[in-house]
Image (cartoon, rainbow, N blue to C red; front, side):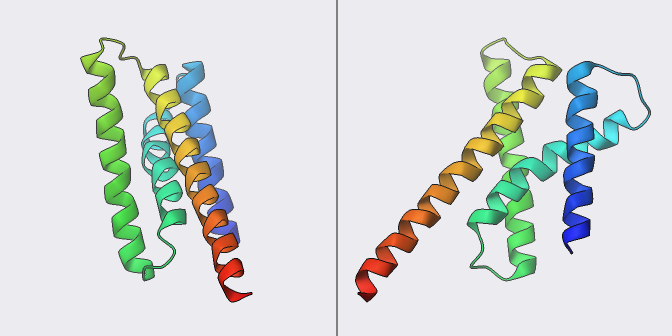
Length: 117
């Protein structure tokens, strides 16, 4: 399982680099699509650890599609849409979501330790 996760991160990173550097490659479209789904989905899956694996997968993928659509809609409404900007916005939103969920999890752990003692 860790090898599969490492491969997914590698494919996502290559997709983001191919899109941001505007390199022409036949792998660009599938790798970028994988990045656009995997980055927000992995951040959401981190926050949904209490669910069963299949439910967590479905919920995180649905949330990833919703995040991508909301980012695209916001960028189009503000007339600032670009491929590079969209990739950067998804990456930034996913990183921010992951960090916020980690902070919430850390805070919950401290609260649970205080209640036990």
